[in-house]
Length: 72
Image (cartoon, rainbow, N blue to C red; front, side, top):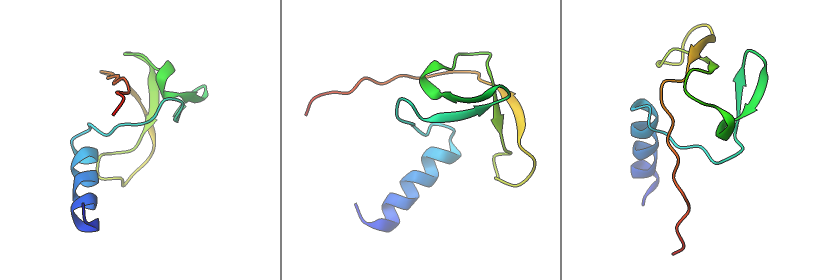
């Protein structure tokens, strides 16, 4: 994959709200930093507007996804 196509794929994943994070990635909550794999629907996480401009505010987690590693 060339750099341009790779960048486009990243932008598509992030703009669709379907980006993936590895287990243990820290996410800011009102109580402090929490590993992403410990978050559940209904938890409050600190979030910026989708365009990345503006104040960080608490938003509720509305869905979670988990993908298991597959041996290649």
